[in-house]
Length: 138
Image (cartoon, rainbow, N blue to C red; front, side):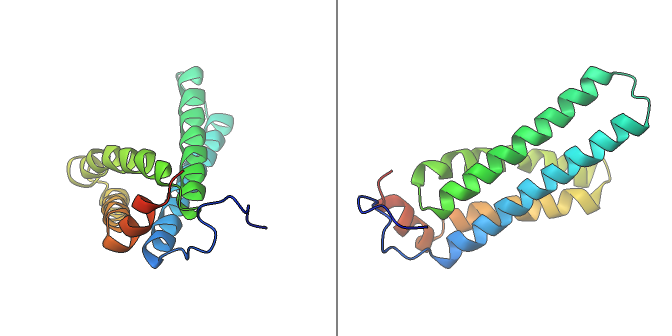
């Protein structure tokens, strides 16, 4: 894709911290897309007690996947404005992951979510990422 001559990120190399954070965020988006698929299969093959509730869950998972994918794209393009929704989503996922791992007993789901959220937060606020994101205007 050709770079816009007025683009402030032209010639700026994407740091490894941003590449790694983008990869993790994209994996989160894929995970939500997979969850929406599983919920859709359960809706079609089963008999949910609340059909509209199941549809709402599917829509919420799809919306989250789209939001994360857009944020991953924005952060890959070194748009500092994309960092805010990513940080917000990661902070929201911390108590959910903790609850899944330690209160609901679903360690296989909660611990990876916890590790990914903390890793993305660390990567986005690492010196290399801050150097690029804090100086590039949107």
